[in-house]
Length: 471
Image (cartoon, rainbow, N blue to C red; front, side, top):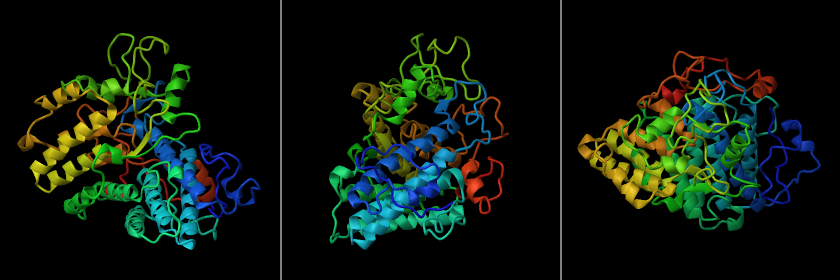
């Protein structure tokens, strides 16, 4: 494993989706098609796009673990917690970090504090994507170009490093003397708005501080402080909608329609929304998927696959092109205002401030409904339902996690929540034919990494073994 390379970016900065080109990541330094010293603005296009795409790549695995999605075939490997090779995802995230390392280094050399801050935010996010799936991983030794086999940092070290990067980002973004200003047209997430990037740094910080809720170091007051400096409306959301062709979730939907089966919704998610599990119809289901040929909403059980009619019958629910989340031009969501309200609700609840927790809980539902485009009347009726609008005295941590589960649909952060919550969502069961006796807590290191850096890859443990923050 080696990350001594010349940064990747095509002359047309939006043609960045593929990992393509060289057959071996470590041959990048010898590729004559690469440009040795790309402009900061071009690297900004590359890295802001890759940040969102890598979030989606990770979510395309974790969404099976939290049962948003289910494999249409019986006993699919990810569906049923089998050891599965995620080399492509690992490599994509490390490609992203390598470009961000270059962006930060070049920005520092040019006195471009705005670019340094933005690079730090995205580096921290990429680092958590890797650490929250696999645990220990290379970072401190990975991008120096001095070794083909970088050592692994522990999960605890990676957590601290990511927080340090976010704090550094906040400091850099606050500077007023950046010698190079962010290029708005090249910033595919926040359009060159440093205040928006600062809010995202605080949002990711709040997310990380809340993630250690099982630890003695957890401090609700610190979480609430970070939340208060993050998003104030849906307009602040960190999202990206510049694609070579279309949103990758939309491609999943199109492939499924063409019988390259994928994107089937889990019965856990569908029943969470259609009234079966909670006795309340959630109008967001109409914005997530389309009714079946039977005019109802029906999911697929994880590990079971298709039952009944053949795979062309369309008597189950799938990712939909009609959804504002998964249409061709829909943005990929990295962090959102609605998520922050649920982070606030949880932290306030744990701090004993149920009034603040309840206000944030309702605000999170409202913001998410609005993000999904739910009609105001349907939104308000849902909030008024006594099973939802329970009042501050009756608010529970279960209700907060229940609603956040919907708000983080297809976001990799949902798996962190599921593990922190010990998968206690109502009706949540092990997949049929599960390879583990209990719920999955981590993924196995990919074959590509064990082949190249096996001397440093930690010994495998059961995939039911919690990560450091999950104990």
